[in-house]
Image (tube, rainbow, N blue to C red; front, side, top):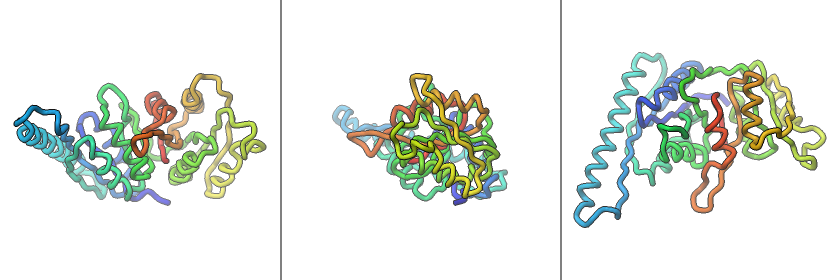
Length: 279
């Protein structure tokens, strides 16, 4: 499958500039259509205002959200007007409680969603909600762009995190357009189960599948020498000078469709290179 439809979300033109730059570069490299969702957030929480203030508060917050969406759209159009790519800027307003449904609907029809890292000093709950919505609601592959770095849109050295799970397999399949172009792809396992289905050949079946797709693949089995598996994977990526990590996105929740699990969250918090996730 090729990447022909790319989606990114811009809320803050300054904080989201790096992801927008990477998305435009990716669209150019892939001859893809780029859609930018210019999002204004209505932070109204009905029911928490004193009597008689509801209507005024609702209107004020809605107007502010519309202004934010307009500001984002203006910045996007200014940035992309000279780009020789197919693109569109779509303004939208949503509350935090409804932003997930909006992003999930848009993500369903994207081959790739590119987003800034959802954790950090300039990030909030809405950024996490956007990432979760694309992954779990839209079922789209999400490429998280690290801050303050120029991303290689055609990575040459990719680390694929493999644990025999359905999520990791989906991620590897969704990453095929990148893996096929890479010079080196390392299927990396950390302490594979001694009694698992691949115990005699850890990572072998995935490696074989990728090779049949023309991917230059090798397998690396690592010991868990650090408290978190994600720490071992990040160190391996740095040691091998990988320029992308591919991994399954793991979620858990008793009250929502899903939220990012601990391993996925820690990877996004710590990784200083692009991470492509799928669920």
